[in-house]
Image (cartoon, rainbow over all chains, first blue to last red):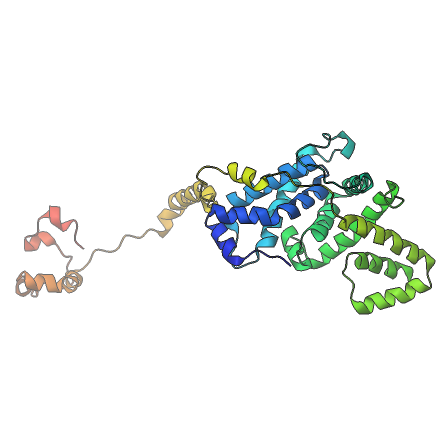
Length: 181
Length: 157
């Protein structure tokens, strides 16, 4: 598990920009994938990570250096994601802006990209509370306890949401033909 | 184990939350239950799809962009209690206005003896001790009686 060096976290809290750069570099991939799962669109995920990092820097004084950094950062990011979902009132995936060019597509075969679009569409069809639980489970390295803290839920609730979430996702994924491909 | 229980455990297994002992029990149930095997296969595919790489690259130079967007001199994080300060100030004013008459008590005038005790050192150094010890200790002290003008005495006990 690749956790942040506590010394960097402390420097970040005091406003050290170099420490902040190290944090961005360490967490940008995880937050990008989290944003993709939460919001569905690469362009939105790109804006999401920038907003999340900027928000984290603005609110750095609220970070307790005596506690792990990751759950705090994910909590900030999830709040940014929730605000974005609220703003767009959860429009169906097809009605949102087209795939952006900000995130260049990797050199992977078309079939895999199509599968990932189906994954994102299936995630968009399930309840946001299930989506964010699954996104955290698959894209962060948080333990269940840390996930519960980041989401402000009890351990039992997070387990229940994960279980219901993966069942709901499986049905949506199946309905979209995900399993057949 | 019935299918309802197995169904819950199948989801847990797909999420990596099942203990080894539970996984063994579930496997035994699956050996004899085609429905649960089918469910398990569907959940396994779902788990693989969720865990697969997203196939997209991050925007180039993201860290530079984020740092460029930071305010030139980052403002200190807001202190939450400041947001409540107008409310607290109002509460204090209301408390003083409404509860003041009930809680404010003027201290009683000091007797001569109390003043003499409080300022005994000073009075001795001024050479006033002898002249005042003969006065009635229970009478109200008056600085003017010992030659201290009122402009000064108003700041004394």
